[in-house]
Amino acid sequence: MSKVRHIMNLSGGKDSTALTVFMKDKVPNMEYVFCDTQKELSETYEYLDKIEAFLGKPIVRLNDDRGFDHWLQVYGGLLPSSKVRWCTRKLKIEPLEQYVGTDEVISYVAIRADENRSGYISTKPNITPVFPFKEAGIVKADVFRILEESGLGVPKYYEWRSRSGCYFCFFQRRNEWIGLKDRHPDLFDKAKEYEKVDNETGQRFTWSEHESLSELERPERREEILRKAALVSLDKEAKSGHRTLGDLINLDDEDELGCLVCHL
Image 1 (cartoon, rainbow, N blue to C red):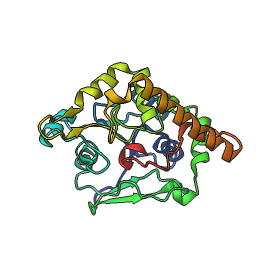
Image 2 (cartoon, rainbow, N blue to C red; image 1 turned 90 degrees about the horizontal axis):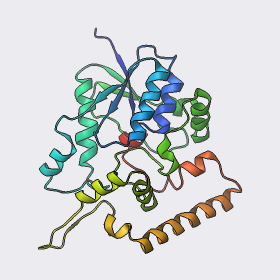
Image 3 (cartoon, rainbow, N blue to C red; image 1 turned 30 degrees about the vertical axis):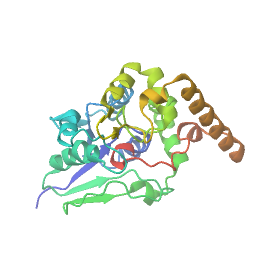
């Protein structure tokens, strides 16, 4: 009988990292993997290095050698979106399933007890998902406590962004796009270059629905976006009576769930 493999798929985000800490001494033969799109933020790679140092073992970096630009061409220039998530399939799921192969695998999924979602569940019969946080009753506040106590803290991108993912992730809110422009103007410009308008048909290929990045970065529009984001933040603070670290980092995160294989 073949040996069962235990695999933890890291996203570079808070939940999967907290689960890594939570499971560290429970499964000594755990394999840690990260599906690298080659389009990640530098803060994500820095955080993965910190996790490796904490674990004392490497995180296997998986990627599709053909890369995002190849698949963009295959899909006729159609940018991925919440309705067409080809990036998740081609750059995250398929590399992971190829790594697993036909081995019997237990996959550790970082869905919390306070979440009503399932995350990425493979249809491959040899992959069995388990949910340690759900079983242990771990909620969002516990995740931040686990990260704080471990010394890892949270990734630096949480200063301006609410989730992990590619620098051009279409699930970014508009104020997060502004955060990208302010902190990584070179990446913002690269994201802009992917956007296209078909002059013959009028069809727009933009990361945000109904708005291009060129339109979003205009001074008057930037001011409007930041003002609205500040009002939402103040409203949440007033309703809760105080701000927690989770409020500051995950403003409205339950309203806009991203590709779960990326953002756990």
